[in-house]
Image (cartoon, rainbow, N blue to C red; front, side, top):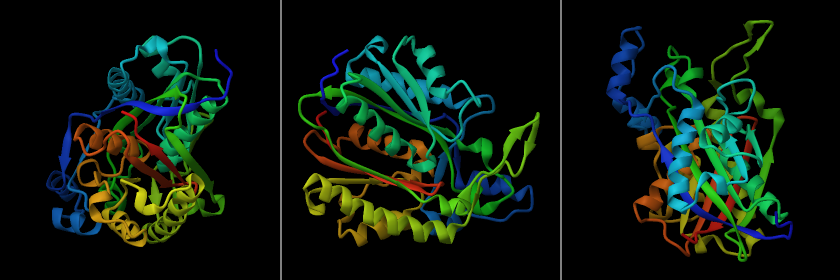
Length: 330
């Protein structure tokens, strides 16, 4: 392997969503059978979400990740054997171990090279992309699969209206390839572990039993306040690191958690609405999958083009956040 320092570019992208679409009306009807009241209007007004994709029981995170990875490889014009690094960002791995990345590697027929998971919840893809870029800058990888994949429906309390309406399942992937000119221009990652309680799933398996609360719990007001603050600061910092102004950014792809957060962030950054990418209405919050799903969507719609500057941002439990500024080459 070439150990000379090099840059990285996004060579291809792919995504996969479970075929079962659950509309707000579908979800409201299901919750009503448990005497929990909600409605399409209530959900849309507070979140912007209109539907989500939900995996059937038995469908795993690696199942979704493999499909997204295959599509990203096809888009990049590469074969599985070209890949020498697999990183999967997920909070819903198939097992305690082996890693989901190793399962994906095996199912794609990739041998050798590193494969590991990154756990930064909704910031996971940004963390994973930054890590893969660092491998390439060190000359330790030529072609990497970077995947965000989640089956969050497994860890939702379907009796909690405040959280179960927010999330969906899915996977997005990119192929990152070595290049002589930088595609990833700048990246910054951060965390504040003192904020763990505002968004967590604090249960675990010990001695053959579930210990603690196995479901996702969230303080929505606290998350909103933290998210808009840190994402604005991170966006400004990563652009400064890259030596570009915010108005040079062509597309802003934040973590797709809530349309109110997205719109508020765009206003704070003084970015026009046509630069903001919103897919939360179609996908809901897919945690680590949300940014790569949104990136693939705008590439396939023709909205994202070669030469454009794209700012990708994650924020999530941990509390974690970060930004990656990339110039598209494909």
